[in-house]
Length: 208
Image (cartoon, rainbow, N blue to C red):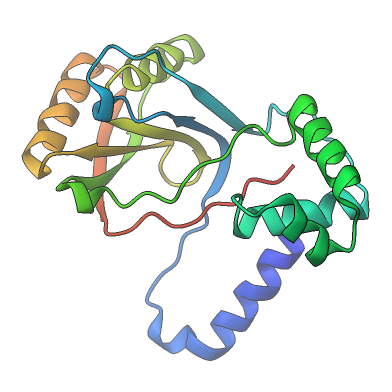
């Protein structure tokens, strides 16, 4: 979705529901860092990071690549034969194009939609507001947070807040213990943070 598409939807929503909206904020994700869930393994598994955002080089896709990606976005487990039926592209060509997009970094990985609550875990997101922040200190902050086993993604934003961190923890107390530790370690650059409980993980689409 580009900005024009976003604001078309934005205007339609306001047209119908503006009287129910007290205030609104716009948040643009500049960079999204996705991590593997190390809290599941508890075996010192290495951190695997998927990076999406403004630092990525733009790659132009043709219509057939877009057709394939549109199908994979909705269900990345679709069989090649099913993709061929849906897109009207041959099986061999789909296999070739998927491998090429993986090599180019257009397809960086396949992620399942996770429901941490089924394992008794809660999902919380911290919206961090910085003060007196430098690029070097921000890198230290991100590196520290990504090494916390319970962190699953970090998003650098253009918004009222500066950065978002999502955690999956045993309970709210563990989440606040983690954030208290983070705030203490980086009290020179953290003005304050706000918290939100995530009841389900929304499907995310990352497009260049």
